[in-house]
Length: 167
Image (cartoon, rainbow, N blue to C red; front, side, top):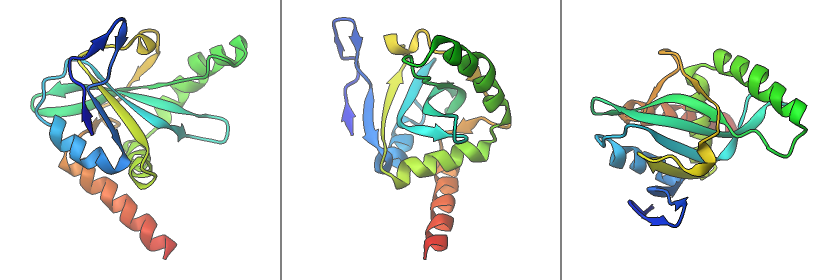
C-alpha cells in the first residue's frame, strides 16, 4: 500500500491510498478513526447487477463518530455509449438498481474484490475531477456499510462459504 497523502501535481489529485483486494482488511483498519468529510473508494472492478447492468462502482464515504460509513454509490457509466442509452442508464436504470440493492450485495462485492485481488483507490477529503460530475445515489439506512471489523467478518464468511462450495 502506498501513502501519497497531500500530494498534488498540477490539477491532478493523487489518491491517499492505493491497494488491492488483499490489502482491503488492513486498509479498513488503517482508516478507522480518521476524520473524513467526504471521500471516495474507487474499485477497479465492475459491479455486476445483471447481464446488462455491470459498471465500475465508486463508493462515497464519510466519518460518523469513529466509524467510516459508505453512504452513497455511483456507477461509472461508459461515456462512449450512445447519449440516449447513457441517459436511460443514468436516470432510470441506475436509480432502480440502487433501490433494489441490499447490504448483502455490497458485502458480496467486497468479497469478490478480496478474492480476485482487485485494485482500489481511496481519496480522503478531496474530490478528483473525474468524480465532480458523477451521479451518486444515497444508500438507505439498511444498505449502508460501515468499514469496520464486522464488515471484515462478513466478507470472510462469504469467502469461506464460496470456498467450501468449490471444494
